[in-house]
Length: 185
Image 1 (cartoon, rainbow, N blue to C red):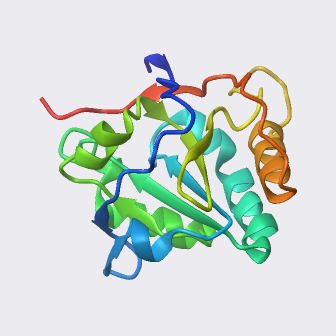
Image 2: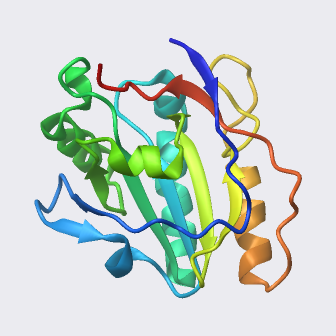
């Protein structure tokens, strides 16, 4: 497991558009139809990474807490499913249904979307405002597998709370840390 940090792309970046298949519904969904007029959280996650497994329950809770406030959540897996069969669309669907993901779980088979967003690790988080400009990128919170810190989503929740209150999101943001995205060879 290679410990990899987020790339921390510039704040204010515009969210690149995409259309990807949702492994649960089987439909191809676009950013345009999934985004929110208030806030959109884009997460690059996968099934097998211990860093993602560590936070999966909090991701579900976050979505349940913020979706009523018109915050959209979108999860994307860009890992090479041939080399990592646990990250195949079939296994993604199993995990999404087992954990009750209240958000679409999209498969980026070509890895083009992950490259466009400069995603580097799983989990990797991006928060966009109503204009789809980046206001937060980085960690969920300070918890990591085996560090003993509870998973609360504090960093991401703080950014969302400030955005929803119309306050500026602090620019001092910590990168996420996780497994590197498994790029195709």
